[in-house]
Image (cartoon, rainbow, N blue to C red; front, side, top):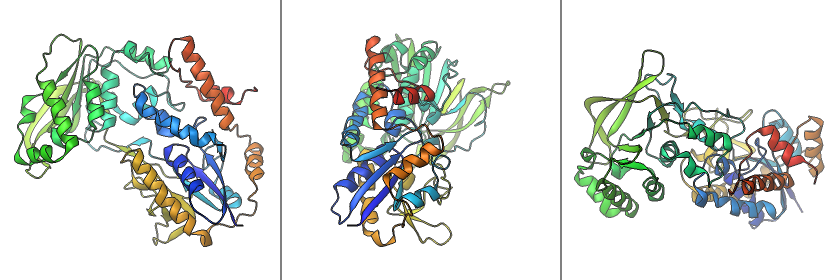
Length: 453
């Protein structure tokens, strides 16, 4: 019987789902899967892109862990594609590869003042507060007034973490260095800006409700943003999610404010157009244009320009994928060019046989976990049907890749290593009366993972 030796680059939900779906699919060949990730621990953005006070979303890890714990997928952590293992290596040892590397960098925002000190990408801040091992341990939290640009879930995550009192994050798995940093923050006001109206937001009702549950934080809304046009009223009447969001916002408008030590402001119909230099190379204010509904769900500029004093700005305008050595890349959209997961050569749009993509690197950073599963199903379906075009590796033995990594001095981690790290983090948390304390340093993660039992 034919056997498929498959490599998957990326051990987040997209990669794990692809492996699971392939193993459960109807097929006429055996399968052996190796899952690679540049980080010592698996789960990708579920571990390093979800705010620590989102335990319900982090419950996804439980499902992903069940897949890995079956034992029919090998995992190699702390292995960097392009350096520790290359495309040539994959072609020598596998029949095909699926790239599930996601999108971890901030999308560009081309407005004046973007490079001022105090202007930050939200993705970098998220990586810091989630304890990503490749980011600095400290973060400059010295602003009293902060702006967050964006109306998606990441924008609300960033705003919530900035506005929330650090002690209220202690029950979570927040790393110790992050708690200490947030504890010293002098923040009093967090302003969230969206260029469209309240009925056009991209965040979910759950994410919004959590803002209103913050202790000692007033929710501030502005009456001028709620003079709905006919189109907005139709959207509320015809979309249950928008209806719920509107109800939450309307309830907040009725709240008494003025007693809390911190305030979280939601500004709609506010299009950021630049950051103002304070005279010393730092952000001193955000400049924005007041917009108005166009009657069709979009907005038009009014020409009214406003400024609001802030000392820091976080840009939560989306994630963007990164190019991979030897693999075609669409620089405009930040994805690997593909047809339903089959990677395409950029010069002539022909199929790059043996190479596939799934998840955000395939479709862009949109959609939830359900989209990731359907993505994987589509990609795996093509992989199965492309049997005649798979690579013919010269050494497909399972031992070969282990020998290769060892010969290059790669300190890779495996599934047992993740279990070691997981148990260690849980023990650290128990000692402090918390669920978990995440290990942040990469070397320590590898050391704990690979220590003898």
